[in-house]
Image 1 (cartoon, helix red, strand yellow):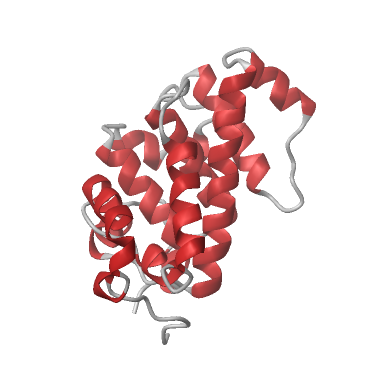
Image 2 (cartoon, rainbow, N blue to C red; image 1 turned 180 degrees about the vertical axis):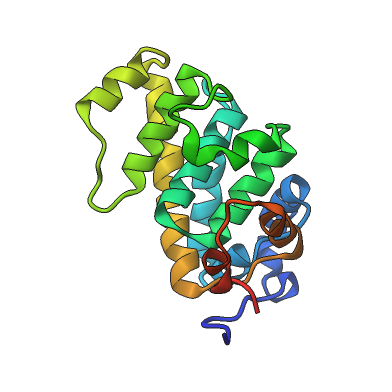
Length: 197
């Protein structure tokens, strides 16, 4: 597959260097999604501010947020974001068995009741049309207050944008998330095919 839109290099947009430095410090690389978005600097800068606000742990810890992001991407089927979120979850020290059992979360002892509520919500929120029910919110409220729920909705909404962005552009996966995805037993090769050259 040929590139739909080619990423810029960091040198093309020196005014974005600080944002690139921050993301590189977290991930170890600058995602191609950001380098494509750099063609519209104001969009990238706004996106980076939103991503920091959505992903920083305020009242919800980062592993829980990233599990929500991973399920959102799984439900949407975006191979790029599945690889990225899974790679980050792994870096956060979440056991590999949890990621491998993500679709069995409802019955797996690996997941706490709070994690099950988050994953159920994230999966339903990623569907089109949205399938979140009042019962799901009632279950979330057993474990999270309304401020925390707003944080979780922010994560799901952020990845809703990223899932659309990367699947539409067929953003090419970087080496380390691609290596992570290839090690996973439950990622179907066709989920990655659009994002590899």
